[in-house]
Image 1: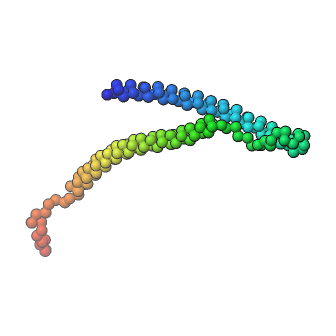
Image 2 (image 1 turned 120 degrees about the vertical axis):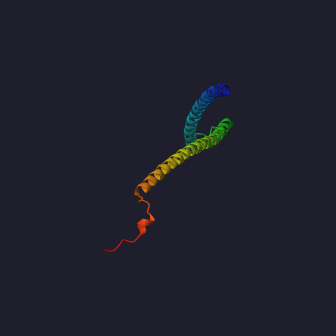
Image 3 (image 1 turned 135 degrees about the horizontal axis):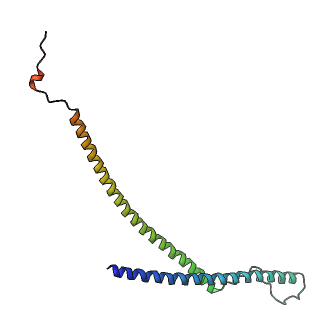
Length: 157
């Protein structure tokens, strides 16, 4: 049985490394695309501001080009899909956190039981030592047994 566990553990570690690498590649690619999109949105905003301003000032003939959105959004359905994946990843990581907390809770409960057993044994040992000590002290402090002859009244002189 330990062999199967060790083999499974090694395979799990290898799979985990592959998954982590793939996740990191996806994150880096997504960051690259977001940087490019943000740059395009900044440039698009500047071009729209310039074009709209020139049209307002009459530098272009009316109807040469339509009014431009000064707050462009170049994010396409791919990026919306990626954002949904991010939300799904957050939900998955929350589930993983809950699972790890459950495992940690079980470990803490097992440790608590072990400490309780140790404390109980120590208390029993201490109680026995105290009882033995009290018994010894009681034995030492007891007076000798009285006899009927000891109970007679003293003679008066």
